[in-house]
Length: 347
Image (cartoon, rainbow, N blue to C red):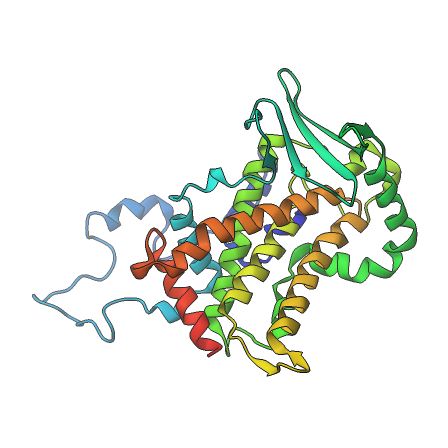
């Protein structure tokens, strides 16, 4: 997920992290500090005593409020609007939406769960909880007796991607490492000015997906492929968190599902081509391509991407879609308001 504090150029607003650089100034010297001329630090206490600064000499309101009494929703930056919707989302039962399929007799933290029935045909990944070491990932081919025969199909696929695709994909890999919302805007030809609510919806989907993916990464703690096979040599730095599920995969899929849900159905011709189907195909393929580029960079296994898609679909189907359709917004009124506004932008 890398710079998936991504899609959020405003992460710089978590600001003041730059102050950690000052930890180096531990000697007698250190950086040159600024001080005010009119109010030096030594006199700062005078502010509380009313001896410094402007004070009114009249009673009553000196300058009455001008303009609306509340900050307008339309002026809320998409980045911060996403955090408002995340706050609503955290109050829902989001932990019930896992990136795996629980099988009979298996529960989270005990037994065996499946990522997917066939990935690809005849191949599976089985995730088993080990009492001491945690989760164990096994990939292989399912034989006629429904037994998993271990093989290295995931590693073999990553190796082929490295040799055959990485040079050509480098531009996209680097571009999408830090931000990929602009790809969706380019596909649908919209932007913050023309469709502000749709941009807020994308930011919310990205942040919610990142939040959920990070939670499950810490549960399963799957090691990155390049940590097991250093020869895969990722062209960009591996993020400082576990691999499963893919953060990019989860974000890209949830953005796709949210955008598709606010677009109108617009058939060009029932006999020739359906515009709705064309848009669905383009958005879905873009989501998969973004996730796959992380595999080509050896930052994720193919099954990490599949788990991300699965997690995003469950989040949308079981939480976001019901919240958007509930009268009054249910548990997520801010999300519903943004969702309805985004739908109107495409009407």
